[in-house]
Image 1 (cartoon, rainbow, N blue to C red):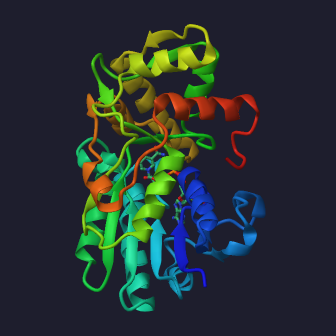
Image 2: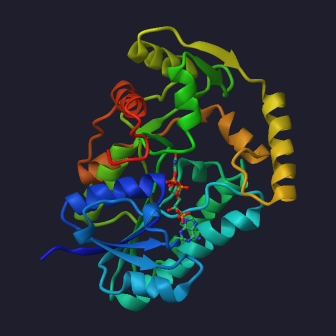
Image 3: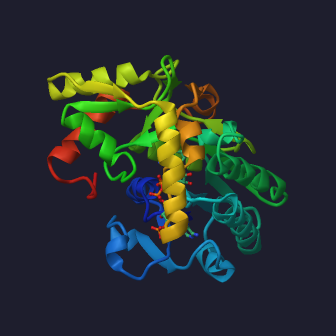
Length: 320
Ligand SMILES: NC(=O)c1ccc[n+]([C@@H]2O[C@H](COP(=O)([O-])OP(=O)(O)OC[C@H]3O[C@@H](n4cnc5c(N)ncnc54)[C@H](OP(=O)(O)O)[C@@H]3O)[C@@H](O)[C@H]2O)c1
């Protein structure tokens, strides 16, 4: 008989990849969704998915989500927003309510939180602070449950609306450089993250602490390496233009004001600029490899090749 797990965030970029990977691995998935339109739900072997209508703010729907599930992968999160409260409501409040539902529906539930490498630098932004506070809240709620968390760096791949403009620009032969000279960052192709989640679900015991994870390229990448990799794949040079920090900050402040005026959740904020210009987003996945035997399959060139292929075929938002 297949095992049942609960999944949040499956209508988003990473969650959709998790849904596909986990159903293909034989898990029966109960997936939380907020919107009634079926087109917002990824198609991934419908028989293996039970959709539960609700949200992280709706404790009753979380109980329905968790009933009969031996584990939950909590991937839903707010990645855009203007205020600390907007992020905390989802990224902290959601963790607390979900952990509570898990404890009420299973004698010893397992909770796997998709956190973020940003949690390592909580002072940079409201988003980063909320991801760290979400981990801490899960740690405090730990009595009666087993938990672990993954801290991915920037995740890329087909289906990601946030990196689509950058990938499009690069394919057309030009790229902004957003970080300072010498900045280094780890990256992760979305399929490798999905495999790591599957491996964690199949391995025991869990760490009761977050694991860092990246694509296996020790020491991370620079913008120059990223741009040269794309140039190699598309077979022509990619021209770069450095965007000064003062310009990004001014644009972010303008965007923040506009978002308050018009009422949308902004991605580019002063906090996001501090994240983008942070010089060190390099991480270390040794603990995760030791615990699970997981190995990433896609370093930058392979992952970017696949990503660009989906863009070229007009299949950005469809099954990978
Ligand atoms: N993308 C990255 O590079 C990256 C890196 C590190 C960590 N992460 C973490 O990975 C997770 C997923 O990120 P993503 O890039 O896939 O983001 P995304 O595409 O924006 O997806 C976010 C998901 O969360 C759901 N969600 C948001 N607020 C919710 C609420 N109040 N109740 C129920 N569901 C809610 C969204 O549902 P709707 O479809 O209904 O809006 C969507 O399914 C986040 O926790 C993020 O912090 C992402």
